[in-house]
Image (tube, rainbow, N blue to C red; front, side):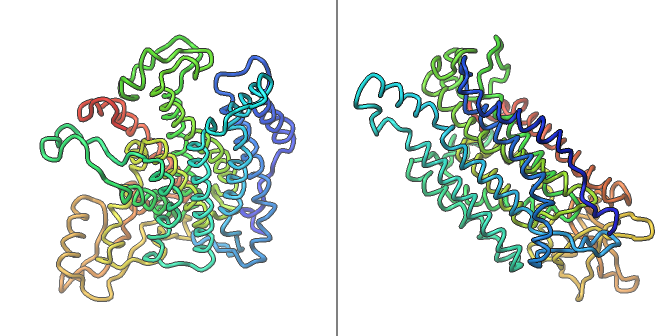
Length: 483
């Protein structure tokens, strides 16, 4: 067997002897005195660690079964042709969804504790209308949307659905999410930047179409920026960490400090009412409690996603032993859409997709049909030097004036390369419009491992820039809550 395809070693002592006891301690910590301020967050952290360990072990254990079921692929940027398990995102999705389902009782542990306490005092116990049905319906509808995204993503891996048929798939998966959002009378208004308010007012109602498009973009944007080992899961990890950091800014901390970021929320939601330290729910106004609960909800979905994706990255890193397939892209994209919609920070979420937005805009000439769009727009691999070069696409017929003008503009900006016929001057070849090829055009040929590191650095830089915009420059165009 080729050395690059040998299973990576796993340290049983590190995983089972250290990480599993730590995970169990986090899960059991809320049952020990003194009870922490946010007990469910401890439990979610414990399940996330278990999800990391489980994914590490299950991917190589189940990989041969996928190969036997003909769910396999060949790495197009390698010289060897040994089959590699495909659709391993199904394993990741199974672990992730199981973690979310097992966490449900802990997410409402305070309700069960109150019911037990009341039953000790009264035979009537907790009234049925005191249970937070709204929170439960939001949580369950989010899980249903994730399950549908996983199912549709796996069907895409099996039946190889065409791009024009893929676009409505995330909309279908988001229906349970949007129905519950509508039933609970969720807000669909978006705050308009101050320079545009004289034209269209301070609020604009984008409706549920915007949220459907958000799920479509977050799902497909990661998918089209793929093709090299570790690219999809590395994007997912970086965006997940960015969302987690953003959520943590909204939580009260058991130390005496104030977050010096005035745009964390409206003054009616974040202010002196928050008691730093102690049990947070006891010292908060209703608006503050709602805001914190939204970001706790986001953390409950992002922490296990981080554990699953980190475990899978170990096997998908160059040279990859497992491929994620479209299943992982659909799962992570829908998870981001879920927290962005339900926690009400969709604009902030889009800021973490800056590289994906750039890649989408750069890909528009090909995705719209102006230029030929092959199924795989991977960089070109040179087996003699082991380097990647910008891949090209040939025009079977002379491009239209609009296409020629667009490629001419992109060429002037250094975003693509075109080749003209020496006599007619017509374009007969151009590089594929992706930021992976753009990196190779700008920085020169490099190895696949170097290219994925450049992509990861770009994603991190994009998140840093997003935080700068969100909490540094947003005050110039927004007042109050600009989420």
